[in-house]
Image (cartoon, rainbow over all chains, first blue to last red; front, side, top):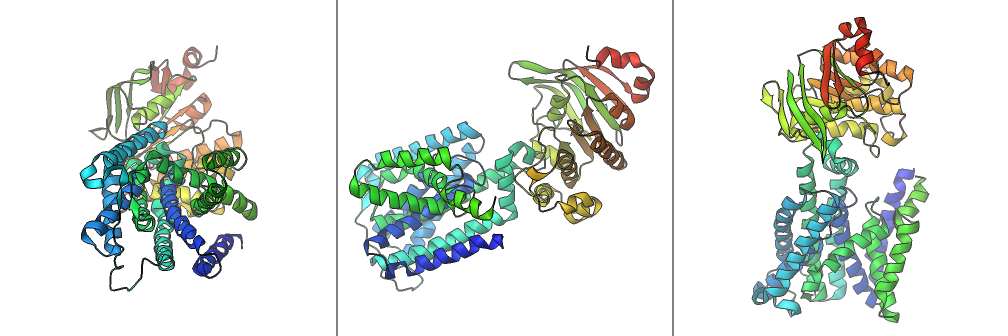
Length: 313
Length: 233
C-alpha cells in the first residue's frame, strides 16, 4: 500500500501539470516552464549528488554548453529544434566525458573543487571567446524554427512551448528514473555508501562514477537546450558557478533521498524567487534564510521530510 | 597461491608494515594474529590494494598484483570480508548480494543469489530488509556471503569475530570450516583459541613485522609463544 503513495502523487502532479494552462494566470505558464526545465537540471544533478554521492559545483557547464549549442544552431543554421536539442545533448556528453575523466579520480572536497575549477574555465571561454560566443551579451535574437520530424508546432506560443517542455522533461525524467532503478543505479547507491567496499566486490567504481557523471551532464545539456529558446538568449550567466549552485540548492531544498525531490525543490526555488523578487530585490537573503532553516531542521528536504512522514520511515 | 614478499606500507608518516612476508598455499587456512595495531588489517588491505604497499611484492597465482586496482584484484579471485560495518547499510540484503553478483565473472558461476539464499536460509528470511536493521552477526554473515558472490579462490577475512556474541562466533567458525573445504582462507583475529581451532598455520605480527610463524599445532604445544607475542602485558 505504502509503496503506491509516490505513484499516486506522481499521477496527480502530472495531471495538474497537463491541465495547468487552463486554470492559472497566463504569467504562470512561463513560471511553470522554467520550473520544468530547472527540475530536469536538478533531477539530472541528483543522479551524481543524491544517488552517487558526488558533490559537483560545475553542473552549469553542461547546462550552459547545451544552451549555447542550441542558440548557435538556431542562429546560424536555423535547424529544427529537435536536432538542436540532440546536438546539445551530444555536446554536453562529450564535455562531461572530458571533465568527468579528470574529476572522478578524486573524492569528496577535491572532486568538488575540481568540478568548480572546470566550471570556471568553461565560463571564462564563454565570456572571452567573443567571436564565437559574443562575450557577455551572449547569443540572442535567434529565430524559433519548426520542431522537426514534420511536427507542426508554433513554438513561439508560450503555451505550445510549455507543453513541448512538459513532454520532453517527462520523457527525459522517465529515462533518469529507469536508470536509478536499474542494476547500474544500484551500483551508484552502493558507491555513495562506500566506494572502497564496492571496489573489493570487484566493481570498477571509477568507471561507474564517470558514466553517471556523463549521463547527468547529457541531461543537463538537454535542459540547457530547452532553456535557451525559452529565455531567448544564451549568455555566460548560464555557465557561471552561481548557476551551478542552483541545482545543488534545489536538490537540498526538495530532498536528495527521493527521485522527485529535486523537481519539487526546483518548483519551490523558482516560485520563491518569483514571489520574493516582486516585493524586494533581496531575494538571495531570503533564500539564504530558507536554506539555513532547511539544513538545520529538515535535513531530508521538504519533499523528503513529508514523504518520510507519510511512508513512516 | 599467494605470496607476499617484504611489503612496506605507510599511512602518511606512520610506517605501518615494515617488511611483511607471507606464503599461502592452495587449500590452506591461515590466521594472522597480533595485538591491536600490529598490522593485521593493513596486511589484508595491502593485499587487495586498498592501501597499496610502497615497496615489496604481492603475487597471486604467479601474477604480480601490488600495483593493480582493487576491483581488478577482486576479479582475479581474491575477496575481502572487511572489519567495521562490513555491509551496505542502506541497501537490502538482496541488493547487497546483487552489487557483488554483477561484478562476478558470468560463466561457470558457483554462487547465484538464489542459490546463496537457499544455502543460507537465515539470509533468505531477511532478503528485503535494509542492511542497517540487521544484527551484528547477521551483518557479518551477509558480508561473508557477499564476498562469496565474487567467486573467490582466496578469501580474506578481517577479524570476523570482532564484537560478536560467543554463539555467533561459533556459527561463523562453522561457516569458515565449511568454506575451507573449497576455498583458501586467510583471516585475522585477536582470539588465539579461535585461530587454533580453525586454522592450520599462523603468522604473528608485531609492530608491522612478522614476529613468529608456524603451524597452529606448534602454538598449541608451546604456550610460551602466546605469552611472548600475544599476552596483553
